Length: 353
Image 1 (spheres, rainbow, N blue to C red):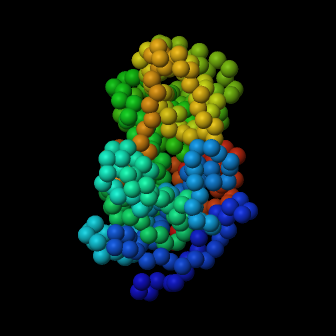
Image 2: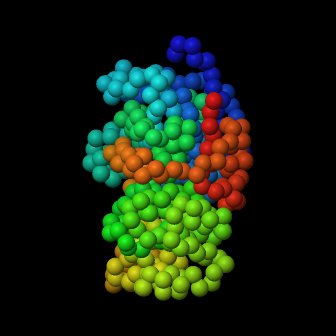
Image 3: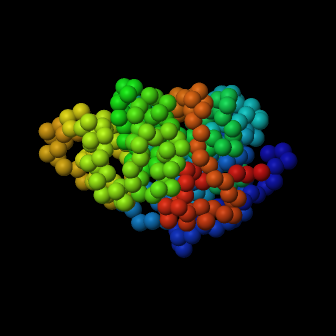
């Protein structure tokens, strides 16, 4: 470990009191297939906040207390002795995904998601293992990449969850340039989704419940925006504006109501509802609508080592930038409060010295 200290600061969630605690914990050592990274930036995702909320969507807490955070970038400090880990060198600026202990080779890992690895051993850093709101972390070399030129290690952290998720949420709609896409939820994920959609040549409608988020959508290039709370005719207006409805609606929110409202703005017979955001409650879909082909429903893989690189390279090529408001590690509870109260704009992150 050289001149590294033996301990580090970490923001850890404790299920016993449902709170965060700033603890001193040992700095881990990388195993053969791992890399030790000094975290440069860790950003907050809504999935992190779900730890504090009751939910029935399969979110599982592992060790307790656990360092939260699954979205980060950093600088390589040391590597394990394995062939993949050895490809990285000290000082590399890297980003990584949080799935570990999986094989990365089975059909599920390669084409579905690491969560469904055939070994059944997958764990998620930030939930079942310590995550990234700490000064150092070990990450799996197989789920790590050197940042493309043009991406800053202290601002690119949101791209390694929100970015990959938003990119594939939009790309997997398989639209053609000039078609209409509705971005439902223009916050941490959606403001990136707007940028990706514009870069792909789509006509973009931003939909949210706060004017702050809609202003962000406009700044990111949205052609039109609608507040679904204050504008009672927003669905009718979108159908009229698009000549029948959007070709795809990508829902980045954790709101069940937003899913209930989405079919009314989708072009009948051709349109797609893309499921990305995860509400606390299960979704309710009208079986007759699906059976008769009123609209299609699809999900988008939110990030594996096999699809993160295209998202990051596209981001660098098209200058896709997350709106990142930065905080100190001890301010993470404040960040959680802001996200819970829907007062955050873009993404919030801790930047480490």
